[in-house]
Amino acid sequence: MKYYINKKVEGSFDEVIVQVTEALQQEGFGVLTEMDIQQKLKEKLDVDFRRYKILGACNPRFAYQALESEDKIGTMLPCNVVVQELDSGGIEVAAVNPVASMQAVENDDLFCISTEILRKLERVIASL
Image (cartoon, rainbow, N blue to C red; front, side, top):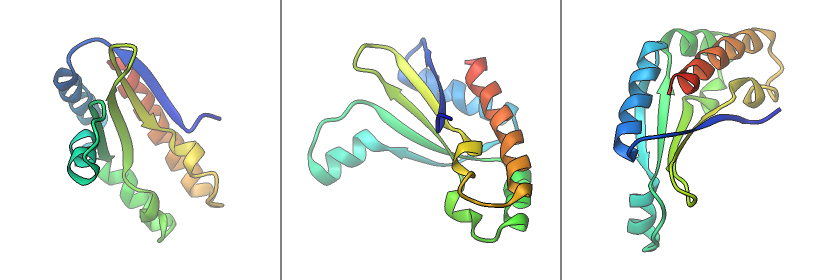
């Protein structure tokens, strides 16, 4: 099982960030964090890196259910979505596969929750 779902998309990097954010909102997610990896690597290591952002997406209802089921599950939240420029050209969007990441946690309730979240993230990626 792959630990992510992904799709190569057309458009400018900034346009894709907007599209991803809107698609996440349509599925009930908000973006809690936005990490600009290109900027941070330049700032901290003085290296040049391609445009690469990590969006920390959270669906409050499912996050609450997961936290109620497993009190340490916050170590695996939020759901990360990556938007990156590809060396070959174009933009790729990739999201964590929550079913794969939750396999280490032996909790049947979390399996059900992660399966629902996966369906939502698959719809987000497919809509781009």
